[in-house]
Image (tube, rainbow, N blue to C red; front, side, top):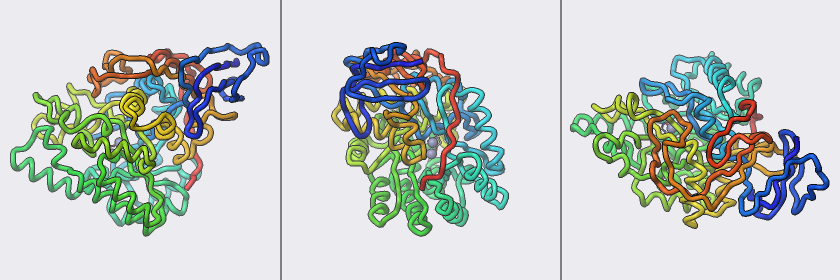
Length: 462
Ligand code: URP
Ligand code: ZN
Ligand code: ZN
């Protein structure tokens, strides 16, 4: 089966040009200024006039199967990846988040089994290292050597649940350096958060609006500085996830100036929402409790500027889907019990187009780079993913920039009972989404049609 996409504006991280794209089976076989349909008479021709043609988007930070804070995230791999495809995301990198007693091998096998059974888009994993005894060390090495794991995740936050001791962190980073694996990290000082939570709760400050004051910007900047010091000492390459504020970005850039190999990720909620959402009355603020927390609105411009300058290189979602009823409301008595996270896997690309490109904060190529190509390069998926070139997977998004609407739970594939962006204006949406040459979404809605998502093993690239 061949498909010829004609007359589109093909936008990659490196180029923005009128071009035609020829797909055969699952692969892009030709990109050229003009491809004559007479030369490929069997091809279905799709006219993309007035549309952008993007590489399939990659979300480098999602949670789907997530046992966390006394509950489990509400999406399964089918619902979350249908949502991803509806929004133009064709590959997700999910965080494997085992508990402190779980073996890494068992966790990897469980997450992979669930994803293979349900995922509609392609997927791969960051492996969170929570347990780190001799058994775990051997298994972690084995997963890198034999199972295509090329990135670890560490939590400096969530004291007693997911965090890792400094002694172990140091050793893990030495192993990562040796193996060429990058360390992704949630950077907040867990001890400081714990102390602040106790202080606020003792003062009777129990509502969701106190979540941000319990982990202010300096707590995050401290975590980033800490991780970067370890990176400097071990030589490990590090990737700071969901960076919410200027202070944290500056810590990373200071380290970069000292020669540390550090990459900084933004996530959509920190670019669009601010802490007043978590201050909404009647406990509605709980919908907006995530960590690091939503900040003052003035942080938005710092983050967008960091994306435009290249200080921040990727935009993910940190999709962490907990419903309001039955999950977020577990924390009515104390904000420390509200499951942390905001859904958004479906909305990310349109949010970045609406608030980034349409507002003139970033250009289209930066959008593609941050939402697709850089994640592919950093995490060993490139050029198979994140590129429109001969030989790349035919993951493509034909995008209609003229569409105008609003974000709404009513069209969401996620199983959460709310959309964090409900009613906000939406400019642009995917007209057609191709996963390896097959149409899987149309006009912002998942259509089915894929034979299922595929696990993408990755070689260590650092
Ligand atoms: O609040 C968040 N970010 N929830 C998901 C877990 C994590 O920290 O990434
Ligand atoms: Zn996190
Ligand atoms: Zn996360």
